[in-house]
Length: 187
Image 1 (cartoon, rainbow, N blue to C red):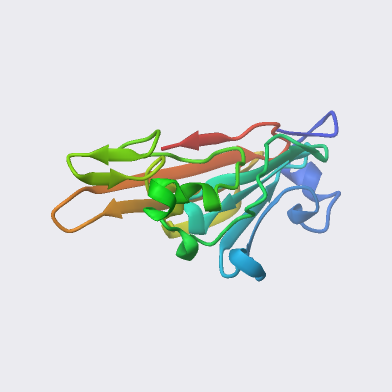
Image 2 (tube, one colour):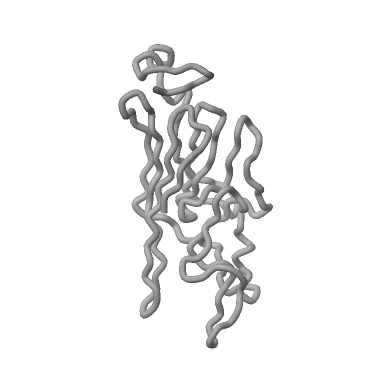
């Protein structure tokens, strides 16, 4: 059963009180249109409990913002949700990652390494790797009833690859449900 506003509802009961489930819980995709964010795919989720968050399809499905009852749950930097086209991995001696680090609830580092920038065997490794600046593919989102529970899911794949080097794919699923005060992230 869905719990909303301190009450338990069956699917039938809840749908008898709302015109559309999006009144209380939804997943909404859109494109950002200004400045360095222009063109980025963002996906907002609200659960009806006061929990809301934004996943960025253009940034590996990282979660750039989250709030509960209007109060931020995540620190946000001044860079905004910068489009990955502006990522300069080698800039500033390998610290270019900081030019697009939005902060947020989830900022993925790696996959082949994470941590400080540096040179190893003549190769420059930028701060925290590339994965946070790679757009996801096969991105899907939606909400569906499973019995009396309304489940919300976002999923996609992020591939970090290079000819004659790594070829790694991260599969990410973010899930929650109507009335939830949390989400699950599965990589």
